[in-house]
Image (tube, rainbow, N blue to C red; front, side, top):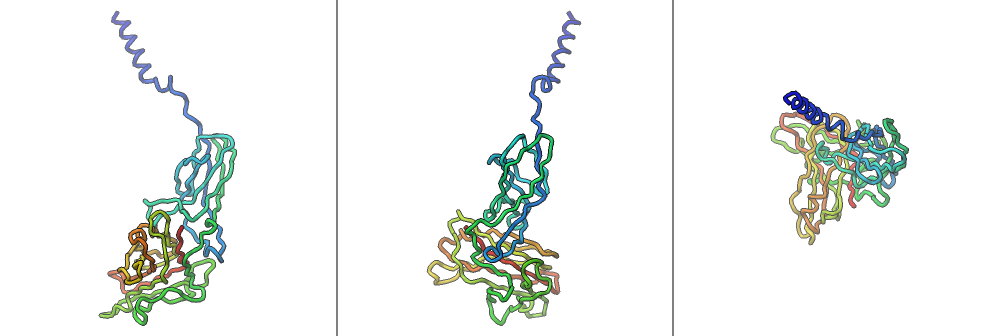
Length: 294
């Protein structure tokens, strides 16, 4: 009996350790799609620059979200045969890695693909701005500047220059040179703002500012709310402090929440900079500022 019990115990352990391989069905073999990048096509007359920083692909298979992928990416799809593949362009909101979003102003790419298990299908998505999405304000410094100095004659630092202009459609850009002068802040600070724009304040419609920049100094961006009765102006509300970038960069600044904090208000958008501590001078380039809302 002892031998029989030992045999039964060994047999039971065998089934316990191997139950997964004996009773579970084999895993599904995926197909793959590969996306290097997502391109943007824009009509300069209506959309402004085609400059973009689309970092992510939000991939849908038959209209069901498969996942969000930083590009370039090779993406497993648990399906084979003909399927609808939709790719929505994703951005880093406020330039922050942890805040990724499908950009609401770009269309998405859609096509049917015949997927084969264990095979990679490469796709090259291109998107546009949604029809009807026209910038409320666009500053490209081509032939002038619509932004205004908050204190004419003082802090009058932002100029239009062709030097180091953003590569592409625009020959000029905005440029500020900040430098330290004892007991004189005029040379180390600038602040410019836009005209007054009515923007959504109900929080349900997105408001964004796109901007190209290159800077050795922090740049401050925000809104200046105007009371609904136009009787007074609130204090300026900083939305984001943009870190320096030694090469041209693109950022998408989300203004939705801050606009929602001032129901019924209109807004000026402001760009400002104060020479960072420890610096004797700094150079700031900005271009292609584009205010969009739904």
